[in-house]
Length: 249
Image 1 (cartoon, rainbow, N blue to C red):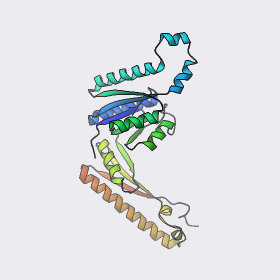
Image 2 (image 1 turned 120 degrees about the vertical axis):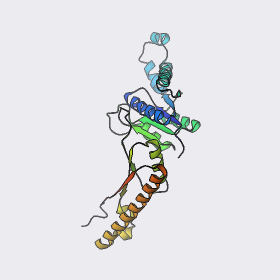
Image 3 (image 1 turned 60 degrees about the vertical axis):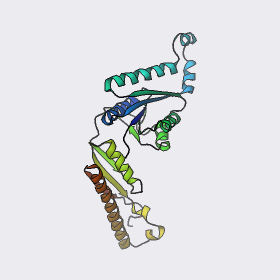
Image 4 (image 1 turned 180 degrees about the vertical axis):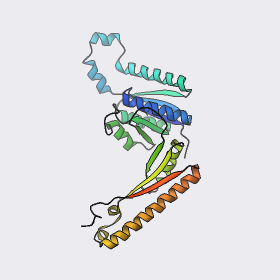
C-alpha cells in the first residue's frame, strides 16, 4: 500500500465540515501528510444572495466568493502554523462533487475526508457526500461527528472479492493503532441458483454449513496474511443471514 501523502478535506465551514476537518488534521499529523482544504463556491447560491442584500452594501464589501476564499486561506495558514504541516487552500467555482473529483485526479490525493452532512446531527448522507462516494477512485472517509480522537475499533465489511485484501491493507495503513475486525455477512439465498432454492431442507442445511465454512476459511486467510504483513492483530466474524428464500416453511 502506498503511503498517505496528500489528504484532501472538503469544507464549507459548516459544523459538519469542521468535524471532517478535525479528523483530517488528526490523520495528516499521524501520517505526516500534506493537507488540502477544498471548497467549491456555488454560483447559483451566490446569485440568489445578491437579490437579498442591499446593492450599496455589495459595492462596499467583498463578494461572498471572495470572502469565502479569504477565510479558506486564513484557515489553511492557521493550521499550518499550529501543526507544522504543509496546508494549502483549494478554491473553485461550481458543483462541489465535480470540483473534488477534478482536484483529486489532478493532485494524486491519497484520501478524501468530508462530513456526512452540513449538520452532523442529521441522519444519512447528504447529496454531495453520496455523489463523491460513487465518483472517486481513491478512499473516502465520511465523518459523522466531531472530536477527532484516534479510532479505537475499525469494522471492515468484506465481501471476499478480489479487492478485499486491498481494503484491509488500506484500513490497517490508515489506522495502525486501532483494533481491526473483518466482518462478512453471508446470505445463502444470494449464493444459490433457482434450482438450489428448491432443494429439501436437509440439503439446504448442508449448503449453509458449506458456504459458512468456505467464507470463514477465506476470511481467516485474509486476516492471517494481513497480520503477517502488518504485524497487527486482526479478528474475524462471519454472520449468516437467513432470508425469505432460505427460511423453512
